[in-house]
Length: 165
Image (cartoon, rainbow, N blue to C red; front, top):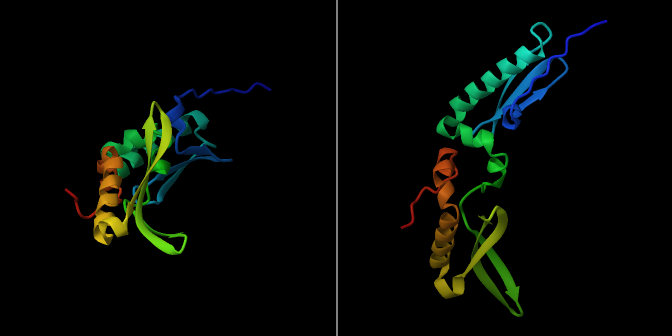
């Protein structure tokens, strides 16, 4: 029995958001608002190679509809969606130090130096700056930490409502 073996060679990022099932190629593209859009392309009649081509076209079409100008960035950067913050709000913490409590706002983010991730944390005491002052300083530090991602965060709806100047 002679069979035909079709080798589909594509770049690493062309298989992103595409998986193979028993009878279909499945496309699962994330949306900017924490959802997913699904499509499937059956390959029983048309073959796997043709189904992969159609699935890649479908993935790119859906991605451009959902992400617009950011689609190439989402497709090429594997950790982009996982390393973004859920929101850009500093966290309020209460710590006990001996007999008293310390109230503070904390801004945490990751910075990358020479490709290595480094955690950055800034703490602002409510006793020193006042509650509003500590919040504003932590918020400004958080916005400065993510300044290169602000347009992308605004597009996916995780940007601040108020601009701090």
